[in-house]
Image (tube, rainbow, N blue to C red):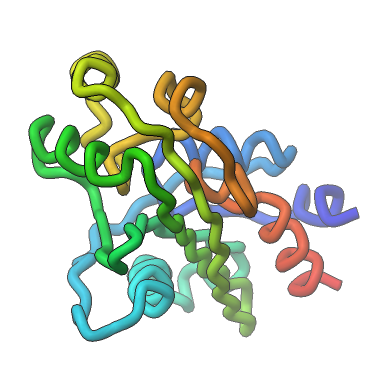
Length: 196
C-alpha cells in the first residue's frame, strides 16, 4: 500500500493552505510544510487549465531539485472559473468577495486544482476539474457569510467546507476535496504511479 511506502520518504507540502494540510493529513501521509515565495502572475492568454497548472509547476520549480532530490514535493494551486470563462482568484477585499459570490449565485462554475509532484527524477503534474452549482443567495446571506468568515484567502471568494457550502451549494459534479483545494483520490492514484 502506498501509505506504507511513503512512511520511509520525507514529504514536503509546498503550500501554506490549512485546508490542504488537513486533506493531506487525512490521507494518513506524514509531511512537513515548506513554502517558497513565488510570483503567481501568468499570461492571460493561457486557458484556465494551463493557468492553474503553470502556477502549481512554478511553485514546484522554486524548490532546488538537487537539495530536495530524495524528498517527495507536493505543490498545488486552485482557481475558480465562472460561466463566462473568467478566472476568479482570491478577492482583494470584503467588497470584492461579496461581488464575486453575487456573480456566482444561481449559476454553475468550475473549480480547477492543479497538483505538481516531484521525487528524484520523476515530475508529474495534473489538473482536476469539479463543477459546482450555487443557489441564489440574498444580499443578507452573502453579507453574513463574507463578514463572518472573511474568505479573502480563497479562490472564488468562498470555502465549500464553510457555512456557504452547507446552505448554498445545490450540487457538484466531481471531487468535493478538489473544491477545498486538494483532489485526494486522484493524488492517491498518481502517487501509486510514481512509486510502483
